[in-house]
Amino acid sequence: MSHQPLTTVLAAADTTTGFHPGLAYFALWALVIAAIIGVPIYVVRLVRDRRKSR
Image (cartoon, rainbow, N blue to C red; front, top):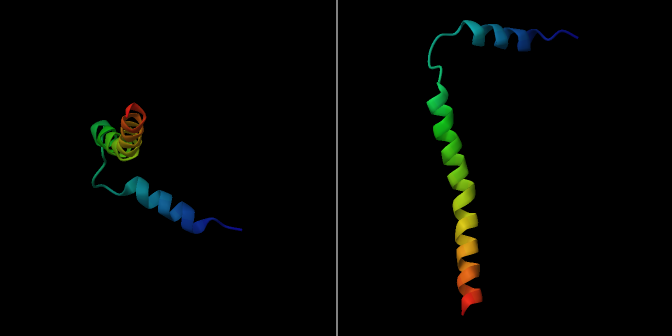
């Protein structure tokens, strides 16, 4: 079985010029994803702590 489509895509990706994000781009998205995951966890813990303190 030939992997013609895969090799074609990889060759095109290797030769295509355009937007190549740097480290800051990935760091920004890592912070965004961490915030999306972390904020609901923080809010749930905050609400639980307030309910326990009453």
